Length: 267
Image (tube, rainbow, N blue to C red):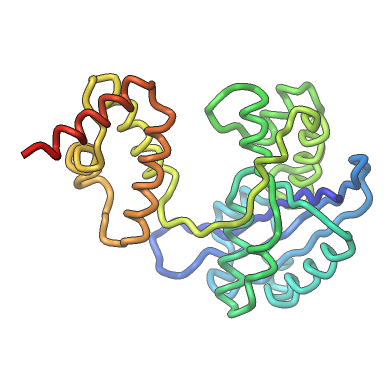
């Protein structure tokens, strides 16, 4: 099993737009089963939309506009990257958060390519693994993790290959503490982190107020006028998050919820 430490950069924008953000750089490091660095991949991608990088992205990444202008498009680069990945007999992608996989899947679909390769590729979210290792909840950057682990950061932050190299150092440092049973496959989501956090915090708030947490109460008191619930897929996803959060609640809260449900059936 090889471990592919993956990082991407994408062309964010300063204003609301229906046009998609796109991957503009892919960087990856291949580690073998002994965590030995064996290979690297790096490529810039010329986007279809927002081909001229805005000032924020240019400052953040340091990518020169002329390099983007000369870069190949997504279709060619992703084909080369897939061929590079397939040099491994078996691999697991290692990412810092879930955005990298999402962006690759979205761009694959935008270009009307088959997304099955990426949907079947196992990946491990090292950010979550690191937070479990440190027993903390607030997200941290790769640079902050390196500092905490007393590892000297090398390279330029927000360049894909350099970020992949730095992430690989964190991966090596905490490898023996990671639970790879938590590896996953990409799954479409219809909610954002803010919406999911709102539901989780609402369940805790209801529990602290000794109120029986129900979907109806959550919707009326905490979600109304804060989340647009017109997409059935989003509603289903939020209900799943709500129910999963209930399972984490104190036993007495679950009992109170059950009691409330029983009372509701009395006529």
